[in-house]
Image 1 (spheres, rainbow, N blue to C red):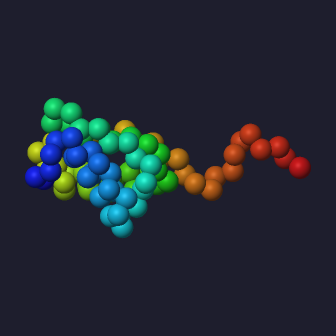
Image 2: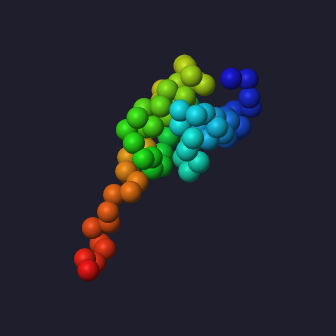
Image 3: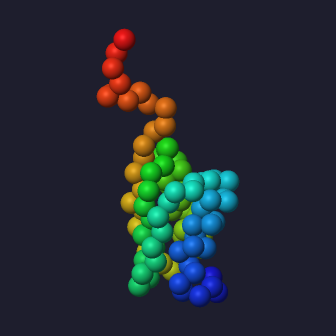
Length: 83
């Protein structure tokens, strides 16, 4: 990747938004000293794995640390009152 170092996190974020394997908008990306730190919530373990793949494709020589949390969408909320 030939972008300026301060643009790298935004470039990765844009790629994660537009890559059809991921298509996630609310991910956190930090790049520091040879590491890419990824965070946020995703709907499935498969998307979580794909986020790592995309980051590794962009920065193959960096350590990828994926700290995203799988939060399945559509699950009933335990806090809802039963009628």
